[in-house]
Length: 430
Image 1 (cartoon, rainbow, N blue to C red):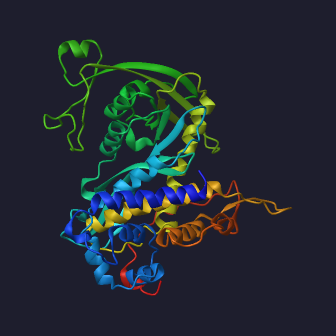
Image 2: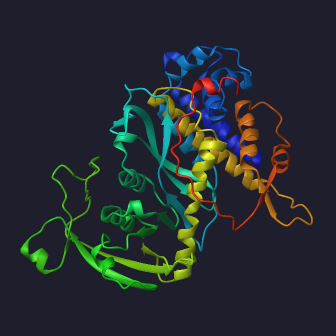
Image 3: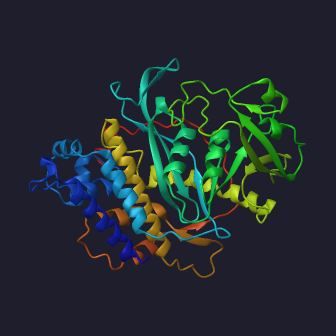
């Protein structure tokens, strides 16, 4: 798709979604803050105050009027824009004929509001704080988000969120889903096995707390198959046959939202997995163990390469928060934050798709290869989203002028310092 096609797809998506959701009285009259204007405004919003957001869009209304209007929009309207925009665009990159997705979770901090479901309090933070948890599906090769589940932090359930996304998506082409160790679940693996066109690559535990059949394997590089049967009962016959018993509470029925052990499949259930173990190039002799449903046509090196790709979703979270601006929310309620999360995901996808179309001219004689500066590209694309009537015939050229060097092999110690929400008073002049 060309840049014009991508912007046109987003514009028509916003228009169609607004037309179907403007039947209520609030958006039926002629006003400056119509539903299409509101959708473009929040998708294209920068990280400053609401006054600066309105000024950048050339809309002469008060921030209070904007906040009042937001309260009349269901967050699902923004999710509908996100889904429709994805459906209108084409993401085609594959790895050996497979679309490559990854799932992980990230926290979105928001202003303190004890009356909201996102309010968290425990011994370490007696005053409490507010946080939402975002669990998206991310296309690693096309660099776009394909789906997401947003949960209040006290109700965080990453495995349940991924099961929900696996169930509601139709994978119309062969897809491999890459997951880290936190997604180790018999129930989730069974859902992936039962889903047509879906395979998985899952990093699993390999110590004394590993799955029983994996813990028995020797600690060296290997590529083998294991077979076992999962059961929710524990009869003498089950024990004699060596079934793996899952203790599923009675309340954990299929579709249950509890974070305790769930099982949504018949019992007993036979499962066969391919286990790949390889040594990392860290000089310490460290091994990683992968459980997968991919066929043998994928070599051990292919599996290693696929799992290495998973880091792309981690860098996408950094871009989502700091390039798109998700650390700078513009409201205190969970509903407003949910609106902005879907808006940020849409802006990310629009920017990423346009960046793919930019031809990067490498400087002659440079020691490094260069790529588009994504943060600057986002600023240019957001301006086009806020003001769709402008002239953007040279949009790709503008983006292509902002480049950064790619310096492979650089390493830095990971900083796990907790990061809070950027308050309104620190952004008034942004």
